[in-house]
Image 1 (cartoon, rainbow, N blue to C red):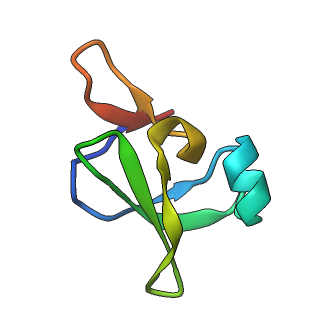
Image 2 (cartoon, rainbow, N blue to C red):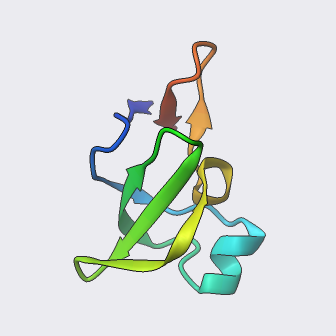
Length: 71
């Protein structure tokens, strides 16, 4: 388990959500910035990619205290 920090970029493997599949980033490693509102900004080639997606759509989970993490 890798605990993520809000507003701190980190490299993760994007989950296979409907949104990630639509954006054609599912299963790929990308830099992601978890935002405090439950959204995540994905970066591709160092630039913001599309619109923010939810933590769940990006493959980010929450622990019992609401902290984001990836398995």
